[in-house]
Amino acid sequence: MARLNPQAEELNRTIETHSPTVYELLSRKGKAIYFPRRGILAQGMAARGKEINATIGIAYGDDGQPMVLPSMARFLELDRKDAFPYAPSEGIKPLRDKWQELIRAKNPSLGTKEISLPVVTCGVTNGLSLVGYMFVEEADDIIVADLYWENYDLVFSNAYGAELKFFNFFDHGVFDTESFKQTINTGAVGKKIVLLNFPNNPSGYTPSNEVASEIIDVLKEAAEAGNKVAVILDDSYFGLVFEDNVFTESLFSQLSHLHENLLAIKIDGITKEEYAWGLRVGFITYGIKNGDKELYRALEDKTAGAVRGNISNASLLSQSLFLKTLGSETYEKDKERNKEKIRERYLKVKEILEAHKEYGRYFESLPFNSGYFMCVRLKNADAAKVWDVLLSRYNTGVICYGEKNLLRIAFASTPTDKLEKLFQNIYSACKECASS
Image 1: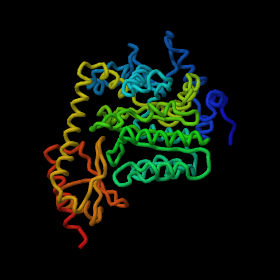
Image 2: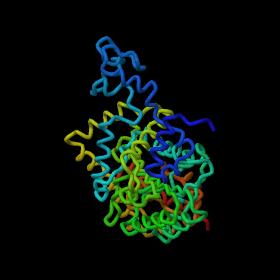
Image 3: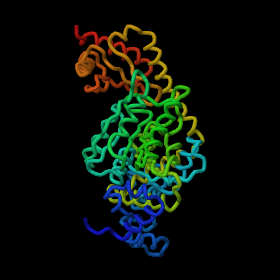
Image 4: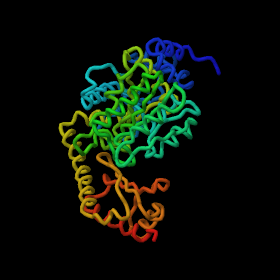
């Protein structure tokens, strides 16, 4: 392996000094990456505010404004300088500060405990990929529920050579804590990577307060046993909880200061949480017990280096647009209105399933209480065949998880007045395909 860049070595020394666990968790690429503060970027920073600044690769007009296309700029109300130039690789500072503030507001038990400043990514998928870059080695196991977003295969297995190691998600309608515990404790004590996604895609499940405590206890025991644990929290659907006695905070609030051997990595963004799917703004935030500013600054620099080496930076336009939105007087009301519409559809699904006991002959719902989705498990029909019949004969599309014999239903994207017909169509298709 080539000698590390001195800037990477400096960051590694800082990380190892302040948290040997985090240093051990870093992949070879994670140890090698750095943010180039002494190269072109540093020279560009030094030239800011000078009478003549011939450093940056952006074309400027004689008026000092970015040389954009008026035919494009006229569609924007934002100032050109907030839309067209490059953003910093780590994201614009006001947005990073604000997102950290929002994390604390939405997770009050976090209090004032030290966490990193979020680093901006190009959506949650890019955030997951960057965490893979930083922490995942080829042949590492990633412990994940057997009901999971299939993009994890591409992000972690195809890109980084990791193997997804599954625990059983549900046992008789409740989270299978015992399977989770057994899977983590299988094998020798050492590096463990755990990926948790609540609300879960595809099931739409978030643990209760009691189950959340059980999950936290399992992870604490693993750390106390000497394992170095990285817990990746895919919080894509954070906040969309529709029942009482459901854990409404991110597990990050508890895990980020649980044990010196456990690094919590929160990946979230504006995609689902802020109803801005195509703007592609995500965040990576770190937390570990006794983590301090020096440790987090080094992690932020490494993450920003990974961003720069992969995509350069996330869209300035998207970041500026969302930051401006946060200052709108109607922002909170608009957001709550959308959540209430999804809650209405969720409650309608519950009502339909309760009213139609005959559906139970052909399918049963998995536990769901949050997010965008719910799943039904087919009892006596093949999910792939039912999926095909729904498309071809009932003008209805759902997602098929053939290996689990499940259908995933996105109630968040289905008009409320179509939900009754949707489930009737599923019932009818199951009857057609049912084995005798």
